[in-house]
Image 1 (cartoon, rainbow, N blue to C red):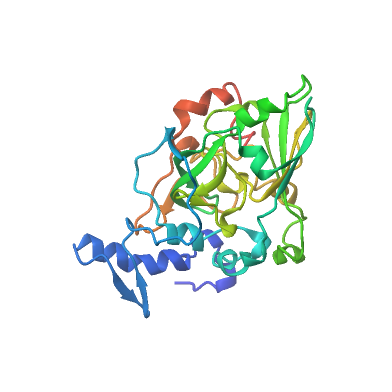
Image 2 (tube, rainbow, N blue to C red):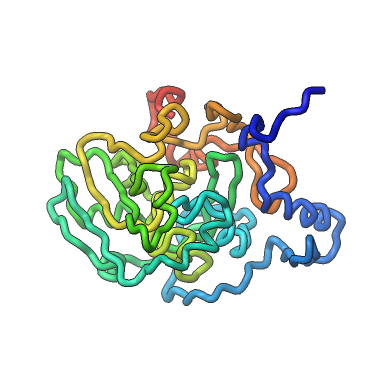
Amino acid sequence: MPIRKSSDIPSSEITDEKLYLHRREFIQTALGAAAGLLVGGATIQAASTPVAPTLPKLDGVRKGAFGTSEQQTPYEDITTYNNFYEFGTDKSDPSHNAGTLRPKPWTVKVDGEVNKPADYGLEDLIKPFALEERVYRLRCVEGWSMVIPWVGFPLGDLLKRFEPTSKAKFVEFTTLFDLAQMPGQRSGVLRWPYVEGLRLDEAMHPLAILAVGLYGRVLPNQDGAPLRLVVPWKYGFKSIKSIVRIRLVEKEPLTAWNRESPSEYGFYSNVNPEVDHPRWSQATERRLGEFFKRKTLKFNGYGDQVAGLYAGMDLRKNF
């Protein structure tokens, strides 16, 4: 049998460290053993028990109308297993390095095809909205997934406040660019700042939210503080973090990963098990904390709500 060099193995076939550590947790649970166990000297808690956060609680959070009743991913995993290249490319880098980010004070510029452009302080931006908890699945393009109790408000309600003009067809979002606060931006892995975008009708869909917290508490830096997008039917990289600009535009914006590798990362990037990434299948995924893979759901399981947005579109061409 031929033996491949490590450099020849695609990233999709490499078991992530966090998943590797959780393999014994899965086996122990299946055998009905105790919730906590020692792996390499570190205690892994039961998947149903969030680690007590240190960030402040958010007041007045109500249960949202949308979400899933699936078991939620532990707070510890959500906050230590992240893609946030502004703080490093390893999954553990953001939790180690994001302390340099200063989420207060924070300003968001709103401009482009709107009748009410302005620079908004974060508090003024979110003040008119009731905060909701939305338990959404998150599916990463790399093949892993989580279930996260976000706290936020509908993106569409915010956009209406700015009065989009008739020329507005897309929404462009931009992440903070600051080498001191985001040391990973010194690398050449992407052309900074990070930019993402949605078609306007996608952005107006009630499932799309701007998140300011998770597990009822203030959003941690490594998860996109103080303001991030959450679009649950798309791959995770579409849900841009640490937003400083929202611009409504007439033409499709050039987004960070689509610019970097257009054959691998399309503008739409809807979760679709029928359309593989050029280097790996998207038919299955591994939920963080689980041992076995599960089938990936089209639109991440939100097809009943969002499939109509793409009626008549070729989803292989518009991937």
